[in-house]
Length: 164
Image (cartoon, rainbow, N blue to C red; front, side):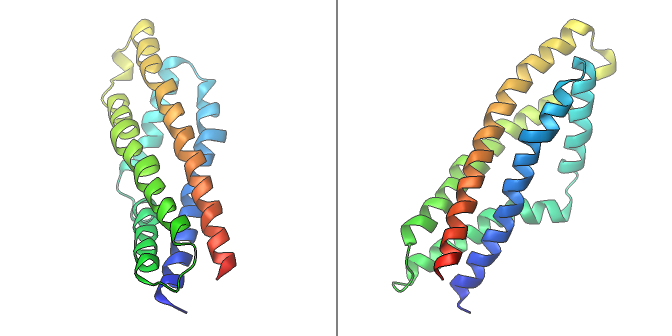
């Protein structure tokens, strides 16, 4: 097996986990907690986010590894004139960086941090409602972008694996 094929397989596996994780948030987690009161919604998101941001090694391997393995595979493809579909894997790598990782760092994590900074017990109903309003729709919108892009990346990687 070539080094390119190895990194393509690793990138595909990690991106499948990433797409599934983001899809689970879009399809189950956020719709589930959407049904809660404003204060309970914020508390629930705080609890979920604390688990994610606690530096779990497996989560970090999946999250960062999905892009790193994809970038390495794209670089190997670009350096090897024998590799077909260099444009597909390069586009997938760019999409991973600019449409999944960058929005995560510039939109979703700052929104997460805003929610984490709240003392839900001291918020009155209006403050809890306002905090939720300033968070929920923007966070969901960008998570949907990340989800769709991650699924598209996975489809592209599966196509490339099929062509090996």
